[in-house]
Image (cartoon, rainbow, N blue to C red; front, side, top):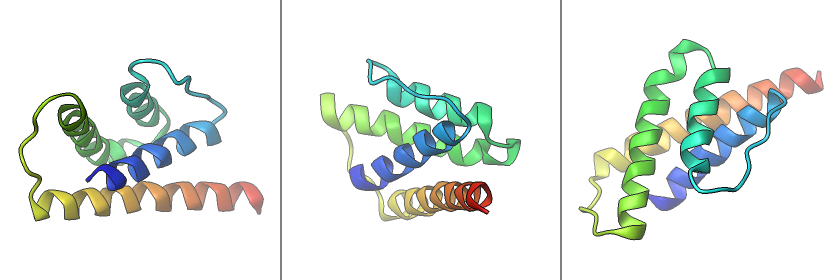
Length: 98
């Protein structure tokens, strides 16, 4: 779960950076990165970003508290969502390069 979340978070920061913004590594920057991605992405990304934010909260619980086991379905959905964001970033960067 942690690696899939990290991929999604990094894609969010890449999408934000591609729009000319930079996140600082300060407390709360994971939440800020997801919120910033919501500000730069079209409305159809909101559902994906909500699930990424839920994974962020789960990550925090697993790092700082006890967390319940993650289900296979939750992990599968997070992998799909992370891939969605990576694909969006790839398309954006391809458009910039061309």
